[in-house]
Structure formats: C-alpha cells, structure tokens
Image (cartoon, rainbow, N blue to C red; front, side, top):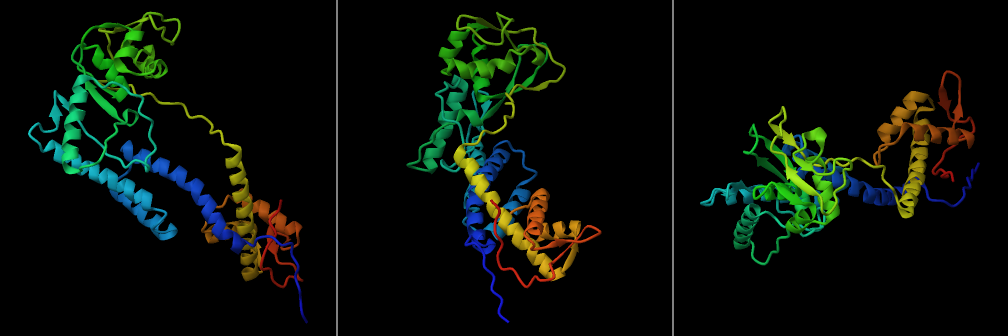
Amino acid sequence: FFFFFFFFKQKTAYEIMPSLVGSEMCIRDRHHKSLYAMRLLQRSSVSDAAEDLLISKMKIELGTQYVAKYVQMGVDMKNSKDQTEAFKRLSHGGVINKVELTVRVLTSGLWEYEKNVGVQFPPELLACCEQFEHFYKQIHTGRHLMWSSGLGDCEVKTHGFAKPYTLIVSVYQASILMLFNDKETYLFKDLVENTGMPSSLLEKQMFNLANPRMGKLLAKANLKTPNFAMDEKVTLNTKFAAMNLRLSFVLVLKKKKPEFSKEHNSELREINKQRAAVLQTTIVKVMKGRKQEKHNELIAEVIKMTQAFKPDPVMIKQQIEWLIEKDYIMRLKDDKYSLPLNFLGVNMCICPD
C-alpha cells in the first residue's frame, strides 16, 4: 500500500528553526545586552565569576559570534579596572584636588549611553578628567575620549551641616551642588548657565535635591509647584538633617510600559507563528514515541525538548487544542492524550493563522 499525505505548502518546523533563531536572537540580543551593560556599569553583578560562567554557557548554546559583543564588554570593564589602578599608582595617587576619580573606558558602538549634553564639569572634577585623559593618551595614542556624564555617579562628602553626610548623586547633581561652595543662593537661570545643562534636564536632576520627602537639600522659593521658573531663587538648606549619614539622591525613573512600533509588533507576531509550528512538531514527536501521555507530563516534556526558546505553557496548551481540532492527536479520559488510530506519521504541521 502507498500512503500519500498532502499539506498546504508552508514552512515546516525544521525549515523555520534557522529563521526563528535569527529573528528571535535580534530582539533577545538587544534586551540581554542592555541588562548586561547595566549590571556591569551599576556594579550589581553577583560576581565576575558568575558573569564569566554566563558568557561561557551562552557561547556553548549560541556560538562564539553571538557572544562576541558580551565578551568585549567584559574586556572593557577589566581593562578599565587595570587602567584605574595604574592611574592611582602615579604620584598623586589618583586623588586630585581632594577628588578621587574612577574611570570606565568603554568601546563606542558596544554600549548604549546618553549623548553628551555639554555639561560643564566643576573645576575640581575637570582637573581630574584632564589628568586622566593625559595619562590615557600616553598609553594609547590616536584614541579620542568622549566623557559621558549620564553613566557616572559621585560620592560627595559634606562639611557644612550638623553631621558629616555622604551624598550619592549623579554627575549632573554633583555639578549643581559644587556651585554652592561659592555662595548659598542662585537664580535658576544662573544654574542653567553655570552647569551648561538644558533647563528641562536641570529641573529633572534637581527634583530629588529639592524634594521635602528627602530632606530638602536645596530650598526653592515657590513651594506650590515642583517646577522651576527661570527667575526663581534656589538656596542651600543649611539646616538640612537626616537620620542616615549616607543618602542617595540619584533620580529613579518610573518604569513605563514599553511602546512598540508596528514593525516590532509584526516581528513578534511572526516569531509567535514560528514558535507555534515548533511546538506542534515537538508535541507530535512526543506522542509518536509514547503513544499515550497525560496532559501535565506532555507539557513538561515539550518544555524540556524545546531548546530554541523557553516555551510558555499557555501556548503549548493552545497548540495541543489546535492539534486535537485537526485530528493529529485525540483526547482520552483521565486527562490523557493519544494518537488517532489511523495515524501513520507526520513530518510537518501547518501553522495556524
């Protein structure tokens, strides 16, 4: 006997797998690289060994080419650590005008960073930057350093309050606070001029500094609105007091629901369609080997066998129902599934619309 099976001409799961990996990796890479970069820059990793282990596993699963950028980002951090240690071995010990500088030199094109808005560093910090740039160019000729203010943070120690506080602030906030070493009161427009920041950025960075809930380090004249007028006075609060001696004023942005473009949504729909075909093929493969299987065991085995992505159990259930509807598998009593009695073999599955 000869049996012929006719299907609509669509991609099989095996044909889809390479394109699934390619398209999904693009989206996954953007997301994972951003998280990896933030862990490195914010020093929130469990350990360097844990990050190296992660890269090693990714290299085995995804290939050397995929993890090349991650490896280079790790190399940047290690080189920066070595360069900072070499800088601190100079005669000044890395401390210039009572400012200790730690620099992370990052390869442009690998890291996502804010564009330089032209902030004017305080003289004390500017002198440190010039010293490091001179030191770096003696080692690496022909390279250009571009300082990115948005990625840095500062520890500012105070001596003008009742207690000696240590303030954790951004570079922008440090540029603001250092101005109050000269005088206690400024007009907002003078702060814009002296820092070189756009008024919108300056207002955002001053939000926590003038926030009464955080002790109101800086006092604004108009307390009725959190916004600053250009001619509004901003005064250093000399009566500032807090229970903790170490305080963080770094602005924490609220997480917003991401807004995806039409192209991005189209990519996700195509990936889900490709994933559905992979899950269908895996379900049928399991059923061909076991003939009968319980619902939970079938889902667990499909999750175990799917290597290209982490399948969602809800999506697996949807594909099981679709296969039942198309008579690829059948439902028995006691929450079991079985192959139909006339089932001879399936080499491909049709992806639902």
